[in-house]
Amino acid sequence: MTFDYDLFVIGGGSGGVRAARVASGDWGAKVGLAEESRMGGTCVIRGCVPKKLMVFASGFPALFEEARAYGWQAEAGAFDWPVFRTRLEAELDRLEAAYRNTLKTAGVTVHDTRAVIVDPHRVRLATGEEFTTKHILVATGGRPFVPEFPGSELAVTSNEMFHLPALPKRALVVGGGYIAGEFACILNGLGVKVHQYYRGAQILRGFDDEVRGHVANTMREEGINIHLGTSVTLLERTAGGIRVVGSDGSEREVDLVLYATGRRPNSAGLGLEALGLELGRSGEIPVDRYSQTAVPSIFAVGDVTGRINLTPVAIREGHAFADTVFGAKPTAFDHQLVASAVFTQPELGSVGLSEEAAREQEPIEVYATAFRPMKTAFAGKPDRVLMKLIVSQATRRVLGCHIVAPEAGEMIQLAAIAIRMGATKEDFDATCAVHPTMSEELVTMRKPVRSA
Ligand code: NDP
Image 1: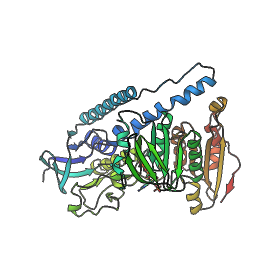
Image 2: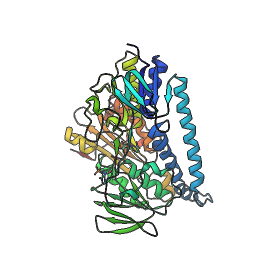
Image 3: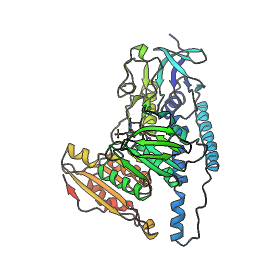
Image 4: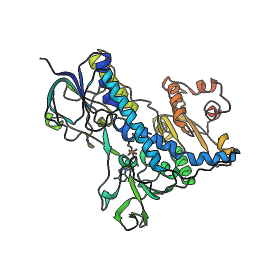
């Protein structure tokens, strides 16, 4: 049987674009791709990229303050949100065009509309057009989830944060994960009065406990009011803003409420259930290590599969899928030891096991140091950097590395290479320090602070 396409990709985000480009450009497959929104997906259009630019923008007041300590006559002045937002939008337009160009160069046919699956070898576009295809890749990503409660419609999500008509003066951020922490810090850095409500005992659940405490304490020192064990019970529009009633009985008025309470896979209405595919509890599409679903011609990569929701993971899954199916190179992405960074201020970089998870697994040694880094200490700031290594007592391998520091994301990327290669504590020790840096502490921690 001949098909219109060898591969039809639904979703033009990180995973879908990579899979389409490799299948077509590298392996010569005839590929179609449908995207109902802007090309580039969450990461480029409403996630990592604009977020990081906002992180940069929010870091300047602290830099001006430091500059004065270094002898510069520098004043931050006022932040012009519309100027920044206009430049941000132009940058996203540029990136979207670059993504489109990449697909065009690779020979992928782009359909700017929604597509659904009709049967294992057929997709239908919102325009009514139908195409037959040998394989289908679902790479539709995820979307923010806001729980339902009285007034929940007054909350915004990360999607809206990049398009605000004006910066709020007072904001409430709800949640304790990546997005809540990052936006609490961004808004605080931009001069917004920030409260953060988290329902649990400490923010950043899943990360190393000591690291979580260190980040939370520093965020508090920077002026963010973190309320633990606290949820919102009611939001109500008032003449001056939004009235927030908390589960602790507190009431406050803010101008903006941001809910960052997790994301859900975009799997509904794609026609998957009709094919007999059983979705996970949150709607994630179950796949095997080659990203293949229970319907052999249908594959899924990225956030819609709910494995690890990170752009580089979706890219690797998409690439591995294309190599496997079209390049005759069976490749399964290894989800072990994926490093990540949370772009809070201070930044957190992490790879491998937390102290708590490692302790459950085997006897360990913990090496940790906290210190005031040279640059901000000179400026009289109290900021402290934290470096932590978790080491297996039996094999001496470094099982986890956790860094809270300026540019921790950059540092953890490099540490992750060594740890993935199986580096032992002695390999770290045998590596000569680069001086004077913060990361030299990673190779100079001689004595464990505890064993467990
Ligand atoms: P996370 O899963 O990281 O955090 C969700 C937070 O919301 C948790 O603190 C959770 O609490 C809380 N929560 C969940 N449901 C409710 C509820 N009903 N009421 C109150 N609180 C609730 O999700 P994010 O939205 O922050 O980010 C989604 C994913 O995107 C991340 O997990 C990450 O994989 C990715 N991401 C990565 C970034 C990076 O690499 N820098 C940046 C941004 C996102 P609890 O802990 O109790 O479950």
